Amino acid sequence: SSEEEWEEETTTGTATATGTGTASDTAATTAPTTSTPQASSVVSGFSKDTMTTTTTTGSELAVVVPRNSKDLMEIIKEVDEYFLKAADSGAPLSSLLEISTSINATTTAFSAHTKGGKMYSNYECNLNPTSFWTRGFAPKLNEYRNAGVLVGGGGGGNCMVGSHSSTVDRLYAWEKKLFQEVKNAESIKMEHEKKVEQVRRLEMKRAEYVKTEKAKKDVDKLESQLTVSSQAIQSASNEIIKLRETELYPQLVELVKGLMCMWRSMYESHQVQTHIVQQLKYLNTIPSTEPTSELHRQSTLQLELEIQQWHFSFCNLVKAQRDYIQSLTGWLRLSLFQFSKNPLVRSSYESKIYSFCEEWHLAIDRIPDKVASEGIKSFLTAVHGIVAQQAEEHKQKKRSESILKDFEKKAAALRALESKYSPYSVPESRKKNPVIEKRAKVEMLKGKAEEERSKHEKSVSVTRAMTLNNLQMGFPHVFQAMVGFSSVCMQAFESVYNQAKCIGEEQEEVKRLLP
Image (cartoon, rainbow, N blue to C red; front, side, top):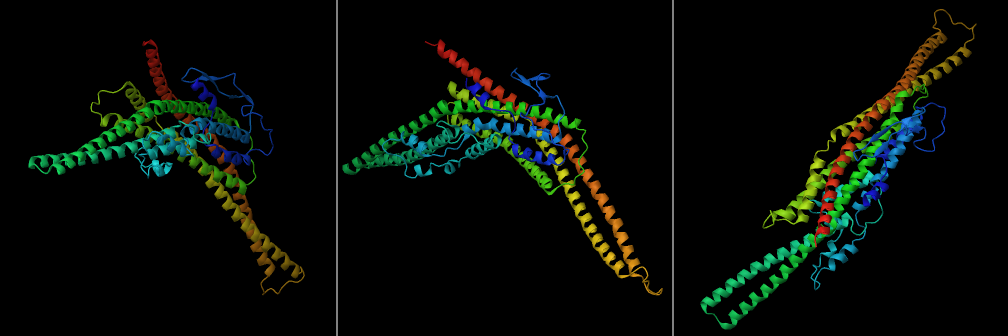
């Protein structure tokens, strides 16, 4: 089935692979200096036999539990690999939402429906993505399309025929055509009314036969134009309805199914990551006493930037999901009901697509995202604390090195002075002894250098302890928050999809029963 294909294409994880990619670098200098062999699999060293959890669909999800201890770097690398796997979970969505790179197919398909070359001269020139996204709901569709790529990463190349993007483009093209035809019809109608009034006045005045007949011919001509215009309006309306029925609705169902599978993969991945980072609590290794290197500092700064991007992308995704379905539902409401002569009379299809989008809209509005957003922000605060402490350590290192350099310079000068004055060359009592004065200053600098070195060593210890503590506290918290959010998203989309699936099955059953 198509649902199974979605299941096979999606994998576990999240779209923030780059953020944790630098986490492994951060952990590298914090971990013990003894190296450990890298696991051939991200779940090597774990057992899937001891714990399972049940998803909302009733299937059992294997959850890894520790079988042997790992060091910090290995734990971070495994978390990172699940992030990388997660990037693939949105690939099917990316393919469905991809912007077409070739507009010729859309132009050709639309031109095939025009009659007698009645295409407006500037119409084909406007058949490009940038001109399409000028309507109320279109920019948000485009925004959601981009968000889909942030979540899942690169999709599947060029836009497929019948893709969601292509369908929306053609819907807009036909709506633009319909708008022009309606506008043209209104203009002809006004001109027709004027000509009819003119004929009436001429007949009342018993005007010349030729003038009256000419006015009547103008009326007949305008009536013919009105007939053609009405047919064009009906043709454009039929094409819009056809696109809505045969392409848009199936794609929306497919989109919801894809979102359901994507969030299921996210949920499963974050669950595994949550159990992996629980091992951080059991790390009893002695922190390294090596000072933070420049590479380490840059890696931590990069990690902070990637977590900021994670938070930014997450908020954009949540907003884009809401904006998309809100705009889509609003567009359907305008298309189906506002200009209908009898809003209560609707086709079964119109009721189906509108009910589906309304249910989707309600489900999205009920999803709480604040906990997950705050979870990422809390983790960002924890990493920022590490960055600040590393900066303080670096500053203390510079201070210690500066005083040590000054001490070594003064000590060298003292040695030169001591060699100049032999022990038997003692100045007169009334003169000052330069060696004694110099030695006193050097001793004072030596004490200060020792003090600054001690402060630097303490700062290194604080950095290492803070790094381990903040990761131990921050990682589980952010993954638990994301597990909760992805679980709610999965259930919401699952409910919407199952409802649409049931309605579709019922309608198919009715069709089979009808003669």
